[in-house]
Amino acid sequence: MDGINTEELLLRKELSDILLVLDKRKMKIQAVTGIGADGEPQTVDPTKKNQNQFMRVDKSGDVFSNFFSNFFSQLRNPTNFSFFKVTGADAVPIADKMQKHIDNPTAEGESLMKDHEVKTEDYRQEHKTLNKTDMEETSKQIKSGEYRYAPEQIDWETMSNLGLSKERLEKLNVLEPLLKGYKTNELIPISLNFGKVISKMDARLSLQPDDKGQLVVAIHGIRKEPQLNFPFFGHEFTKEDKENLLTSGNMGRVVDLKNFKTGEIMPSVISVDRLTNELIALKSEYMKIPDEIKGVKLNEEQSQTLKEGKPLYLEGMISKKGEPFNATLQFNADKRYVEFLFDSNGTDQKVKNNLQHENENPLKEIPRVFRGKELSDEQYHQFKEGQSVYLTGLVDRKGVEYEGFITLDKEKGRVDFSFQNPDKYAKEIKPDTSKKEVKESLKPQKEKKQEVKPAQPKSKGRKI
Image 1 (cartoon, rainbow, N blue to C red):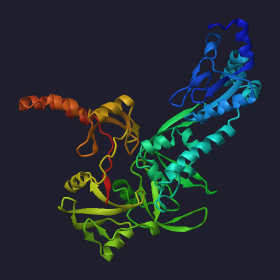
Image 2: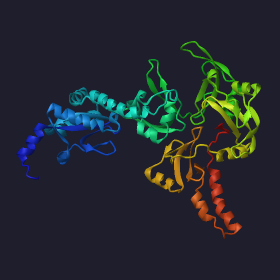
Image 3: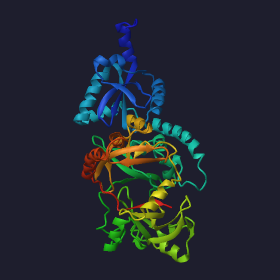
Image 4: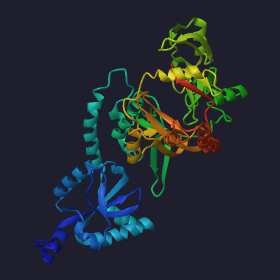
């Protein structure tokens, strides 16, 4: 063994400590061998067979403290783990006792865990300080008045418990709207760890101050349908209210809501979050109605109609292509702006298509998440290359799962979705194919399309 005799090996075991780790997601005790480039601990089963792979640290207090401080700072999600320091000679039997306690908890086992646990509070505080220094670089870019919150105000430890980090939020392009006080503009895959139970879900996120002024993460999960049969901050929904919310997504009037904590009466507009079915209210005093929309200056009556939450049919607007068009507008409480409304029956479909072609913000980078579903590395590679990628587990606004294909349209800067494979469709329809053959090739696809009937919102809005 490279010149190390048995006596020397035993001496090393006596003078060194072994680091054991409990992965809270798997509830399994392992022996640490190192740390990977992904920030995850590298481990092996704590058996005699693997003893020569265990990471050994000098028992000297300063040496271990310095080692663990460096080790802890490299962890991607430190709150997912608990660490234990044991002597080299006792590592295997103690690890076995710890695993038995995890599987069948006892008072004796709890005492054993506490005796050997590495207290991470000091290291976590040091880790936060390092993170804060890094986040200050981002905060320097924040202009006064443009953002409501700064990155260092976010509890990144809580974020890590959701499987999120500052880097991932930046990669998903959702950190900026969070700092501006908005919800994420798309569903984000998160995981909630409850010890032996792990829950995975898609949700929109927002930052909100609590009663003590501390910033907390609000999770807006997907609901099966809007809760319209119960009072909403003291407001009872009428039949017309329900119909409006289920069709356009906006209730269409200002109503008095009550803050039961303060007793304050708040005139507000109400809309449905089309991604989660959550009811959203906004105080009418915060509604911002533009003076001009697509070249049409609003008169006092038109502005008042929008301020009251009502829909407004506006004529004579001019698109970026210079083409005149008419459309229905309404203020959306969730989006906090006046949006265009489009009916699913085809009304104003031409206008909708024209506006989609006028995309003012083409894709600056290729998205890795589509409707809350994160693409794997292989899927993302195919997607970037222009291939159609098949996705399952997508959820519509009524909570119904569906599946389909996404394709990147680089010229138009958008992601196209289809229930049938566009690549297969293109191969089946050849230029020299007869009409009969084309008809036959399309027939099974039409039948398949009829089988998949995901719920679609009856009306969609677009930002003005």
